[in-house]
Image (cartoon, rainbow, N blue to C red; front, side):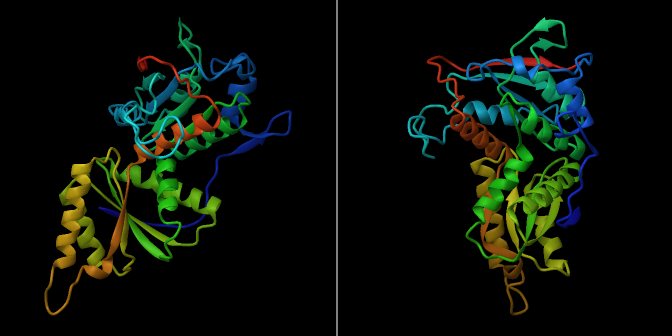
Length: 322
């Protein structure tokens, strides 16, 4: 069990300038300009993006939650773009490349693999038109990916599921005046994930001018884990109410179970009081980061006119790291 109070101080990677006065991390400069490096990618000859596959990797090398969310998503009207299911998969006709790395920490090289046109310089493969990264990425790796996304010049964008989830959280609270609140993170890798989400909150808070005080409590992805979070909140000196629950791969059954458990706590009465009501917001927001990332992927490709719009079935190519 761990509690983390998020401060709005951002830590960055070490930067330097390239010859064109664009500030780049060393790793990104190598990818873009060092033609002798195995990591070099010639973005000037990347090609037209629309027909290329969507690249996906997960920082948890055993997880396929993000891929399954993308390939199964139907929450948009594919004609109008309105957020309304139309009975047609949102990524119908798209090709996907899914990469499983050996190391959960090797997020930057995983993204590079998806952008390359060769399978570790041996077999030809297609490049990815967009890269969606699931799971908790290292701070340095995410900074490098963000820089590469912004400066590659080919329009190839990188989406982090963790950051997409936090953006979705702030969007859901845009009309809520709550000054301080607690985020419950339910994850079986709660320690590493908690740090990644704390960093994402710091970063996006700074970008959006958020001044709320936000605490994170993490525990295992289970009803028992949620119960322990509630009890910790009850006994904590800070009484910032639980407002947001983050569960990657959240399904309706688990969300309903969480809501029912919280209702029981709210109804609990003892010693003339309801001891849990002050620490549980009446309207809890549930966030599924993989779904948030899939939504960002769809809206980004639609905005950039890079959806393939093929009249055929989805196709997934699987690649495995050495």
